Image (cartoon, rainbow, N blue to C red; front, side, top):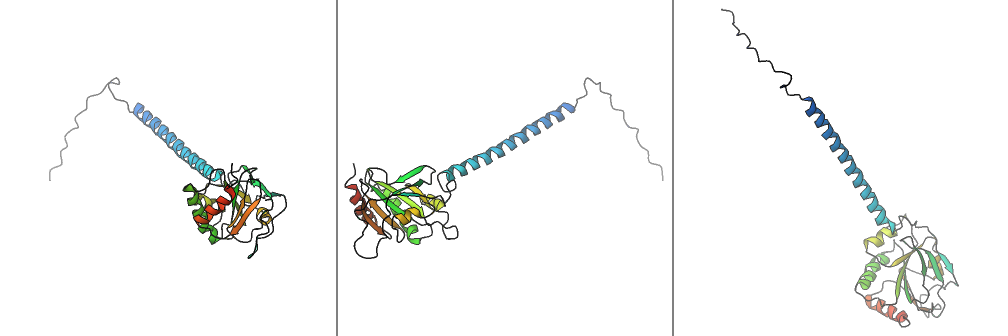
Length: 235
C-alpha cells in the first residue's frame, strides 16, 4: 500500500496590520448596547411597578384602605329612640343628632349638613338586603331622581372582617356608589339614629328635623316619596 501523499499547505498571504480588521471595537460596542438595553428594561419594569402601586393607591385612596373600618364616629345631640316594629315613630319631629367623622375618601364629614335636607342610609356589608338595595339606590341616583338640593349620604356600620362581603369600601366601589360614606367604626352613629335593621333610612329636613325613618329594601317609588318628604324644604 503506497503511503498517503499530502499536498503542502499553500501559504496564505500575510495581511498588514493596517488592513487586518479588528473585532475588538465591535465587541465593545455590543457590550455597551447590551448594558443600555438592560438598563432600559430595568427602568421600564420599575416604572410599571410604580404605576401599579400608584394605581392601587389611587383606587384605595377614597376607600377604607386608607380609612380603617374601626374609625369611630362622633355624635352630638340627643340620640333617637329605636324604630318600633309597629305604630307611630317617636323620632318623627325630633332633632337629628349630628353625626361626624371621616368619610371613605378620607375627608371629614358631618351628617346632616346645616340647612341641607338629607336622606341617610345605614349599610352593613354582610347584610343581603343591603347588598340588594345599594344598586337600586345607585340606579335611582343615576337616573336623576334625587331632587336638587337634597343630600344623599351613607353610613357604613357594623363592619366585621369575619363576615361576608368584607371590606365595605371594596363592595361599594364595585357597585359604583357615588354618595359620601361616613365610617361608623364603633356603631355610635347607628345607635344614636335608632337603627333597628338594615338597610335603614332616615329622612331629615333642612331644619335638622326627622321627617321619616324606615328599614328594609325600598323601591325607586318609595325612594321618590322619601326624597319628596325632605325636599319640600329644599332651597
